[in-house]
Length: 438
Ligand code: ATP
Ligand code: MG
Ligand code: MG
Ligand code: MG
Image (cartoon, rainbow, N blue to C red; front, side):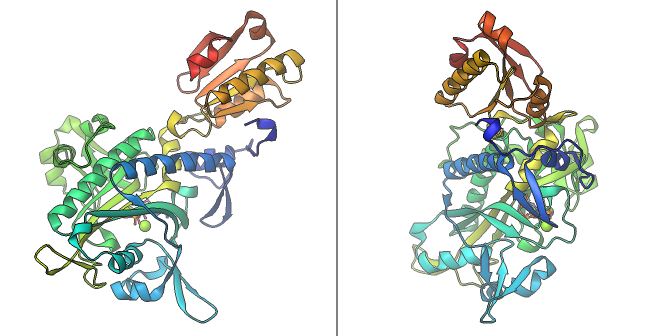
């Protein structure tokens, strides 16, 4: 992408309304624009990051055996009356009436709708286990939307729903999602710790919140320090096998949110020098809730004994539009964002130090074409601006690698590479550069 032809409205000044660093940086880097309280447009750079996050989530959900579909944002009130949640959900639900005076709502979550889909088509235990997910916008009329997309009213969520014949099978489904979540956050460069959590209005008795430690987090959490650098299961983890050993290994170390913590248990289980009591951001939440929805909504299958059995369910959420600022909270410095390569809007930026100089332009154009052809997601700062402004932009928007080329490098046949994260520099011969970077 040529920056001269791109839409990247970076802000010079620090926006006053933004209280936390990720919100300030997302505004300054031209990633988002608030349209009304808790409603955001995702500008091109922000949208690219969001889509990279989405792709990682999809790959890991699919790897674990979950199947993607798409349900609408608007749902019928009658469906929610079946589970009893239409009245119970309260003011966070945005209620809508159509021209025929029929009642609808903008979905805050999809347990009811997915249960309706399930009961329509699935009749036999032979079709289980089943895990269906979608990535769709949700609306919750938060009392206090704040921190940009960290707590917005409209937000993008991945929500998966598992269906099983028995509690034991449903717990195995839960363990598969647990492992998929470990891998998902790690691939985004995040250390997310699963913590025993309250189930809230979703209901149920087995639940973990996925927490990023950050001072700006809204909840207080308590955990064992060793959870912070525990190795993550590899790509070859067998989702058709027994994942209980991995689940047990992770959950044997104490970790709980403030609603669930028992201080005596925490202190008894965690040696003093291993205690972490900190603020955290909830980037995901998984639940096993048994027959809470399948029972009232009559979602059952015929078992191998010929009897009708109500299915056991779980649900598994990740807030994509919260994950993006959470990554920034975890990875930035005083000059801007430091993206992990996996979610960076561009992998590298080519900085033309003397745009307008025919020779430099020609060399940069050629290098850009070569890098792009080699499959690198490149930004090319070809703007007619001074080097200082170009470095400021590259650093602010957090591109992992800067490739710097000007008349001097051209003469010696070299391009300079600077790493955003470490500040390290290296010089590569222009001819071999592409092969090195691929
Ligand atoms: P919170 O405690 O922050 O209000 P929640 O517990 O109500 O979140 P869940 O119902 O567990 O949220 O939804 C699953 C995930 O969706 C959360 O873990 C979070 O990542 C995301 N999420 C929930 N509410 C919002 C919001 N208002 N803005 C952005 N993301 C959200
Ligand atoms: Mg909430
Ligand atoms: Mg919560
Ligand atoms: Mg939650």
